[in-house]
Amino acid sequence: MRDLGWGIAATGGIARTVGAVIAAEPGMRVAAVGSRDQGRAAELAATLGADSAYGSYARLCQDPAVDVVYVATPHAQHLEVAEAAIAAGKAVLCEKPLTASLADAERMVELARQAGVFLMEAMWMRFNPLIRGLLAEERFGALRSVHASFGFVMPYEERHRLWDPALGGGVLLDLGIYPFGLAQLLLGEPAETHLTGSLGPSGVDAEVGALLTYEGGARALLDTSLLSPLANTATVVGTGLRADIAAPFWAPQRILLSGPGVEPEELVLDPAMNGYAEEVREVRLALAEGRTESAIMPLDESLAMMRMLEDARIRLGAR
Image 1: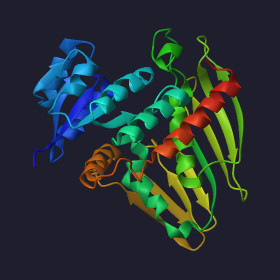
Image 2 (image 1 turned 90 degrees about the vertical axis):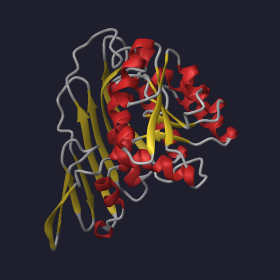
Image 3 (image 1 turned 90 degrees about the horizontal axis):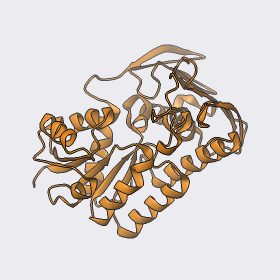
Image 4 (image 1 turned 60 degrees about the horizontal axis):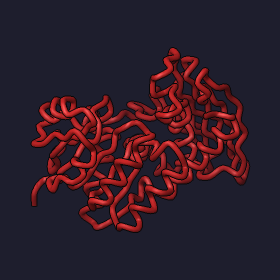
């Protein structure tokens, strides 16, 4: 069997990072790179050892050497690229968030399911071995709380993607999805959501604080900001165990476990393992098994997250 051929849609920082992981992974190769700028596509293709470079995403999706399209464009372009890939029968790994709006996310999932094509959101936090280890840790007992923050100071620039509404700007879609995503992964869907926050000059959400409450009394306290340097750590507490996740909590290198009668234990990530490698391996495994969705990052949970984030943006009055 030939190596699994990937098409990289976009040439920004995350496309380069994940592209390099794919190029280094046994049984995979970057077959082609697509961009709206032919020169940038050609430069990244040369860097990643790809045979082809295209000046359009549509042409990338038509390349017979491409089995999977990794969508790494700005959020607002995700649906356009994924739609072209799905129409061409290509599997899709789409950067988080799945799209810039709930309607677009629902459309993308509907298209993939109707076509019987694999689609997965690239939420690499879920594939980090230390995060996955927390799910299997029975000593937690009943989980009672999740505290998580992600924030940094981002000076206002009208055309920067984080501040531009047309590019899916705002803190929730880019940063907030991680603390909200950790709470979703560990506690599920909240019964109630309480929000506070402020908007930037362009009208996008600039900082958000949230208290999520769950059936049975568990809660999540989440904070995300483009205006202040937050701790970027997380704490998970159960009736029998506490986990302190070092920064950056969404890609942790170490986690400290402690609790009553528990000798403090530090879990350290194997340097050879990371969330990016594990997520592309999940795509390969799913395709080998004939699956069109991932059990680790199910599409229904991607849609549930989009509903939560969109509801929060609406309630805050964000553009």
